[in-house]
Length: 108
Image 1 (cartoon, helix red, strand yellow):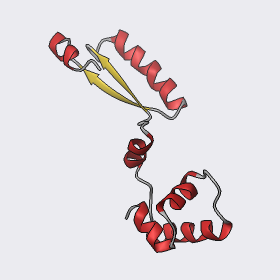
Image 2 (spheres, helix red, strand yellow):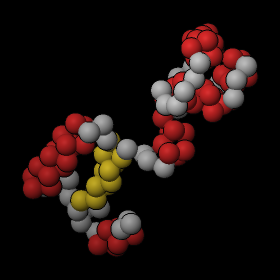
Image 3 (cartoon, one colour):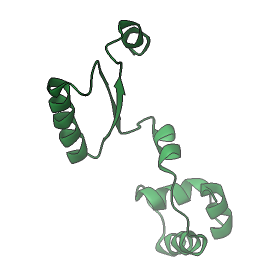
Image 4 (cartoon, one colour):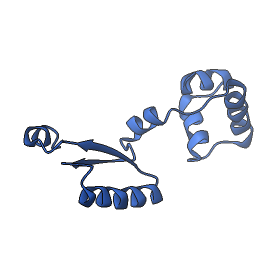
């Protein structure tokens, strides 16, 4: 089940469904009610990955460290993790195993 299916079920456009889900833009109360009913009937849950692709924001921070077991780096990662969580971000962590060639490959 995707946003287009919900739109079909509610008899509205997928843009309208998006506005209801994201609480953005104007939608008539009756239309909003139809969309929310269709969402509930279908047990629809928006796909976070699809959303991140459409808005071009994954809410993720990539962290590359040479050795996660090193207390210095684990402390830094802990701080990054705390700050990220407070701002609704996720961390993607990569441990290079202190291999320079792995570090160079993964530099963005």
